[in-house]
Amino acid sequence: MRILIIGGGIAGSAAALALHKAGFEAAVYEAHPKNGEDLGAFLTLASNGMRSLGQLGAAEAVAGLGFPLTGLRLLDATGATLADTPLGGRDDPLTRFRCLRRADLAAALQQEVRRRGIPINHGARLSSLTEDAAGVTATFADGRTASGNLLIGADGLNSKVRSLISPAEPRYAGQKVFYGYTTEAPQAEDSEQITMIRGSATAFGAACSPTGQTYWFARVTSPRATADEIATMTSSQWRDHLLPLVEPDNTPAAAIIAATSDQLMVTNAVDLPLGLRWHTLRTLIIGDAAHAASPATGQGASMAMEDAVVLAKALRDAPSMSGALADYERVRRPRVEDNIAASAALSAGRPPARDGADSRPVALSDDELARQLEWRTPLPTR
Ligand SMILES: Cc1cc2nc3c(=O)[nH]c(=O)nc-3n(C[C@H](O)[C@H](O)[C@H](O)COP(=O)(O)OP(=O)(O)OC[C@H]3O[C@@H](n4cnc5c(N)ncnc54)[C@H](O)[C@@H]3O)c2cc1C
Image (cartoon, rainbow, N blue to C red; front, side, top):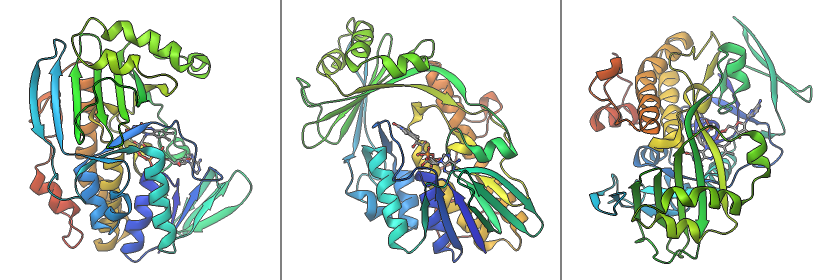
């Protein structure tokens, strides 16, 4: 079976590794001429993401990136410690949480894809597709075409593939997200620990690399930043906008933000509606294209890696493609939609509802998730 993967970001590269491991012929088509554009922001790769990569033999490829996080300290606006907990997977360097730049993660995964002989076609921006019982054909903006048995849309938040099979626009989740880096923070955080702060007007997080660079973010409930503001406002203007919101609190946040000079950027937190159609006969969307969540739970990249493993297992084991796509959706939808809802709740300042409250599915237990991800184990039948 020949599988076309549209998008060579986190989901597309992980899917290429997983489908190749399952014995399929996969090829990646990435719009950007090189590795892809990037804001320079960082993300947290959680232990479930690392475990997923481990099932693909690719955990080593990212275990040297960024730095590990083994503990989480939660403070309130007075600086009091509310919780001090170990993070999952901390005992194994290949399953530890990692804090790393998205661009480095994407580049490492693409390199691993190439190392395994899977083609990545850069500068291939999908513009349309056609499908029938015989196959699916993708047409790219430069006139190139490619045909296969299945097309995977891993083309991110503003997915072209989604617009063709299940049009839906990302929704503003109510928060601007500030990201910054500084080597000048007066009190560096403990290495391997992420400090999260429930401030009076922000949700703040910071971690310090072993080389002394503090990575931080702040989520602020506010009207969305306009395209003009994002294009024209400088780091120092955004810093001066943010500082008065954290200064009243008795926490390390204000000093870290004040010590940030030119490496500060802002995005709008967005997510996708629940219940989108994910597939047709021969086309499927995965990753942010299907289930982008606002960043509050920090699970975007890890969910994309889980998608890859479950999809490859479904296609490997099901007797038909339609059965495989149905199996994939049955297993993945509760998990990723729970994440969208939990992240939306956090962004709105509500604790995430659990245990079926809010008419939402119950989150998976660790054992259930491990069974879904374990390469040799078939997917659960119900
Ligand atoms: C620039 C950028 C910065 C990000 N920063 C953060 C962050 O700081 N924290 C966080 O948690 N998450 C961040 N994310 C999101 C995070 O990377 C995703 O949640 C997660 O990695 C899922 O990845 P994905 O592969 O589904 O989507 P993406 O990582 O967005 O990858 C999609 C890929 O598809 C390509 N593409 C798009 N349209 C087409 C087309 N028509 N044809 C072919 N290829 C196409 C894009 O160039 C891109 O390489 C960022 C994403 C981007 C693109």
